[in-house]
Length: 80
Length: 260
Image 1 (cartoon, rainbow over the protein chains, first blue to last red):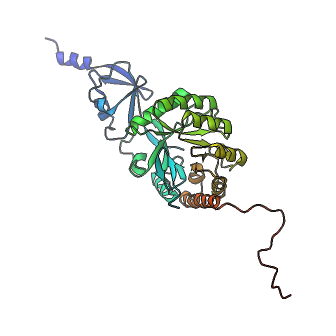
Image 2 (cartoon, helix red, strand yellow):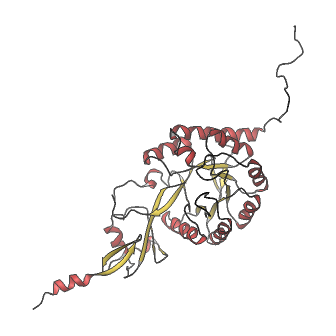
């Protein structure tokens, strides 16, 4: 018998995204809300763009992040 | 002066001083200076969140809340119409459908002068997309009018380069822009100290947007207070109508009744 749990865990780390200009690996089947929670910014005022398309907040929970996605997460900072 | 409101995109404001939120030492200073300025409209920049850094770091919008201030997201740092439009759309999502934005499309890093053709292009796209645009431009009366015709809700000519503090370099152009306009005209950029603000307001500007003049003062909170008074004083002087300039003296005490 071989260890299927081991194969499964390998299987789950197989997406590579670009998040705010940096590469990041993600588990398969990650939704946008999972990603935002993992980053610890779920309660912040942010806006999200995936592959140049704005994703409304109402769609975070059901939006499945895909391999190769380019994601930008922005917020407001001081400026003139 | 409660009967002299500033109206932008159908919303009424009692302060004619708009402030930026950049270049402060920390968020405490940002809050204190903004409060001292009396500003009701505060501009902010849109940037990437700091992924992986301290998640408990205070957020600007926790200090300058959209409940208390009209937040004016800006497109500072954009050098193309495309980047400016993209930034405005992200800002609208960030602020739950908020339509008021400050459009600036820059042409050159040394001067930060606007790229006027790209600004016109971005303004056309954003107006069609339903935004209320306060637009940074140069002090060209022809372009200012064209931006108004496109549908911008306020036109904001520079008085001098952004962050330069050089004051009102071309008051006659600013005056021409004001005389031509049927939307509010605000000086955006160039004010260095309180007298500059008063001069702009005495010309008849509807308001002033400033950042560095306050944030880069030795005491930003005190300068914010000075700017509040200068904008009010300049506005009152404009409404009062200044005396004509005369080359020679005109005695203030009567000649009649002298006994010497």
